[in-house]
Image (tube, rainbow, N blue to C red):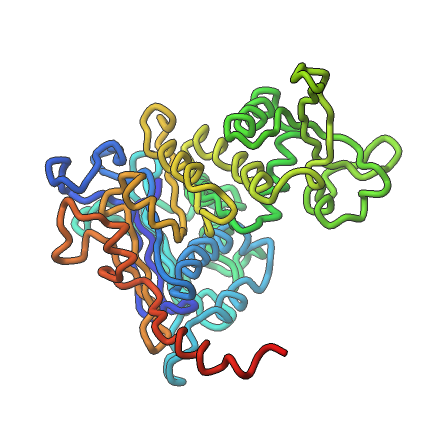
Amino acid sequence: MFIEFNFGNFRSFKDPQKFSLEASSLRANDGGLEEENVFEKDSLRLLKSKAIFGGNASGKSNLATAISAFTYMVSRSVANEGIPAQIWDDRFQLADNEWDEQPVFFQYSFLHQSIVYRYGFQIFEDKVYFEWLFSGNSEKDQIEYFMRTPNGVKVNEDILSHSDPFVSQAIEGNTELYRPDSLFLTAGALSGNLLFSGLRNEIRKIISADGAYDDNAISAAMRKLVKGNEKEKEALKELMIAADTGVEGLEIGELPDHLVDKELHKDMNNNISEGKKGKAVSLFSLHSRYNEKGEFINKISVPFGEWESQGTAKIFSLGSLILDALATGRIMLVDEFDARLHPNLTLKIVQIFNSELTNPLHAQLIFVTHDASLLRRAKLRRDQICMVDKNRFGISSTTSLIEFKGVRKDASYDKEYLQGSYSAVPFLDKMDWVVKENQLNYGD
């Protein structure tokens, strides 16, 4: 379960930042904190969802990308060489040359099997510079499992005994999995270390999706329809119907020849499989036909990519991830959450995650949005609202609304946010002047 993510020197974020899903200690009688949006686990009080607000180019998506880069490194650093170099290319680059000597920094605090772990690493150029793993709720009771420095790895032998083949081989430098550009944690997990494997799997529970358009999410939804069990397939179909898309069913079939090369169907098919005659396989939606008297005739199957809107395609792709997150208690991170979706639908998704009835396993939703109406309609607590702002030097920063002084308990967060009370909004006064001054330079 997601507790806190710290990062720095990444894209527009120069200084260390904290993004927390730990709930404030203030209780319901505070007037601005909905206790239904919080769950308790092993003496921790955690948020079920958190919204990220800010102006265009403020750094909202960069925050989401930082989390995704962290999880991708943990997941793929052994299999894919060169990931640290890619992350290093995304370091903050709007300061003087001395800043190029600072490493990119990621740290994730999370709950796994009733233990709080704090795992992180630093990247410098094309190598993992530092890497560490601790457990414990406070500095007094924390335990160091290992510390990796440029000089090697020091392990806690009481926990990571030299009887573990991987640990001893890594320290001696005799394993191919443990390289300067791979993580000690990832290499250990793939070498069979049970602790490392469990922690890596916990980190990989974070599901990232681009709400504007995500090929991977569409592929995942297609695979669920092709290879999932009957309950999973039926749940996705029922969700599409419940979302009032007009779609009355889903099925996989072979595309007609004249549609095979269309881009929409290339996206929907993603080479999942081929038909019996080698034809492309894609997604089809079911719709009812009626006669002039309004009487039902039959149902027809039509190519999804040809008939359905981009919003419906997004519901299909995100729907599979939402069902997966809720069914397994995972963390779901969505950038451009409100793109192509009606405000009532985004509100309903947030409500589903915040409800004990629909989210009994305490899945957590992190979403990037411009929909200010959610501040009021979703009954978000002040600690569920993260504001991202960028200063005139191009440096982004994050602030939870609960950190703002002078915010009334009964404040209309949506109105005050749009009025600029919390910063994190664009200032557009100069646009009128620019348009007026340049009117004669455009047109016939």
